[in-house]
Length: 125
Ligand SMILES: [Zn+2]
Image (cartoon, rainbow, N blue to C red; front, side, top):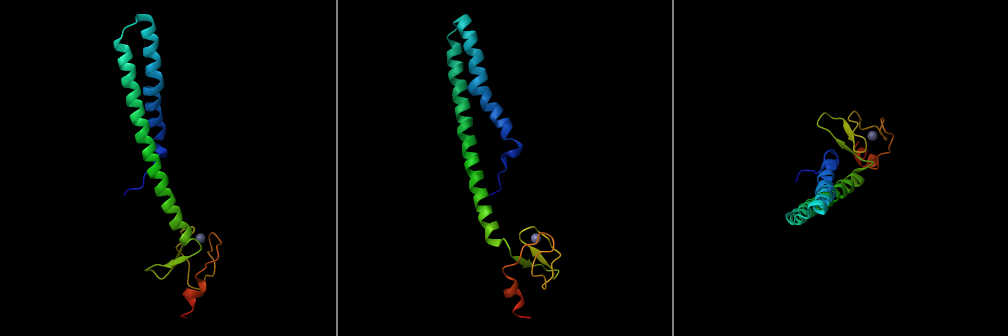
């Protein structure tokens, strides 16, 4: 499943929700107070329904995004302070992504973390 990242469009969804739940019903209610036109009451209810449905879908999207973030964070915490061997022969720091590490590096030269697998990697040598 693709990683959901709503930070770029969440404000637009909140604006649409605000329009259907607050602005449109408020304006239609003001018009209804003046005109007493009963069709406006139905349109207000439809607007509330649309706003509620969009809100529920948005909350569901945020719930899925939060779950994905927790899974990614769990994987990150598991691999923190470790390094992996690259095909080029260098190692990649799993904390910062530094890809210029050698087998003799006990710690990352970029972020400074001590590798918990240093003894495991070097026990064969
Ligand atoms: Zn690092």
